[in-house]
Amino acid sequence: MEHRFVQEIERALNWSGPFMLGKEFAHGSMTDPALPSRLLTPYKLLDLIMRRSLATPQFRCFQAGEELHPSRFLSDTVSRRGQSVRVPDMSRLGRLLEEGCTLVLDEANFFDPTMEVSCRALQWWSHELVQVNTYLTTQNAAGFSLHWDDHDVVIVQLSGEKSWEIRGTSRPAPMYRDAESNNEPPEDVLWTGTMSPGDIMHIPRGYWHQATRTDRGDGYSLHATFGFVKRAGANWIAWLADRSREHELFRLDLERWATRKSAETQQETLVHAAAELLKAHPPAEFLSTREKQRPAPRHIPHIPIFGDLNEVVCVTEFPPHIEQEGDFITVQGAGKKITFTTKAAPALRMLLSGTPVNVAAAAEYTDIDAAQLADVLTKEGLCAQLTPELSLGYTDLVTNEIFSKAP
Image (tube, rainbow, N blue to C red; front, side, top):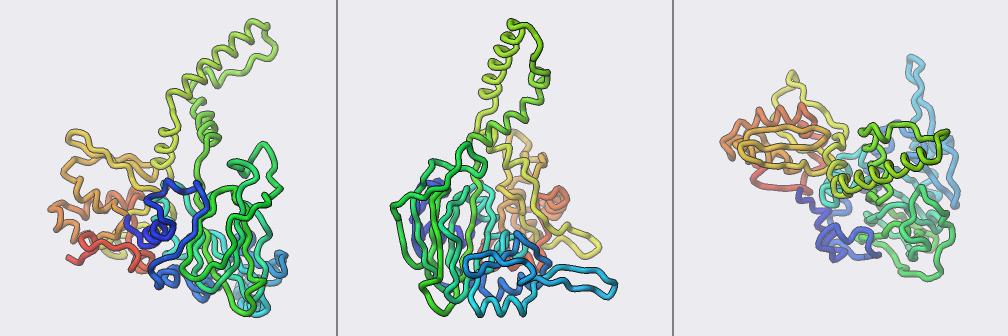
């Protein structure tokens, strides 16, 4: 999947690939001034908020450095049948925004197709799970105090301006669940400055940082934080613990009341078996299996009574694994493993490219029954019908003339 946003990140940070994620702080600017507003604007964010039933902690509001009680910005609307639904109170939110506050919407990719596709493109690029949180700050409102995140982030200033301070780490590779606390920031400041529209910043896991508008006066700031949840050795060990259940030896009770010799024998046996388990299932297998077994995200299924399957797009969280051997080609993704004949390879690679595909055009281009393949892939959850709403997430951001041309 070739996505303009991914390309702009690499150019702005002078990266040649995702391997720099988590390495060091980086800062730069997009070359395309129109891209930030294409991703999200303040009014579009408010429209997303208005049209949904939201609750804390997914939707929060801060003022004067304190988190406001939900009753300050949420209200209950009651239907004529007496059903109560909690929704954002837009009048109250408007007043808070005029006074100066920060609105936080976590997982904007869950609600907006443009953010959904942007996160999917970043996942295909980085091979890590990605979510995006959005922050709208008005007037001279303060942001969060100095803190660190347990994941790498790429921050994009979409509109307005905000001041930032970045420091290094005080504990190497800190984790959410950790052996020690990590509460004291380092004294040295790596970078201070103002983020303007189109600016991009990478903050590795554990780097302390804070942002504010207390020095900016009237105005506003909208930025998006894309979080990359990478896997560590501890996650590999946890996965191996689950794999150990496949072996009877690890399911047996530990000897508590046995003789010393019997307990020592069991220990030696378990240590040897654990070492063999480590060798048999290396970290590379853990990462590959995670990608193959990750279920597809929410998507609308194809329902034939509503019409033909004209356009589809691959919606797996990670690029499907495609392996060709002899007369067969195997596709693994979304927890599924499907085998086709090699004749289907050209059409399969188009349909699973991450780019929207016109099914009739794919059939003409490959001389293969692409409609049948598309039907199988959508039923198995690897592809989805390209609805008008989902198409908005790709328009002008993901393009390929061959795959998307009309028949």
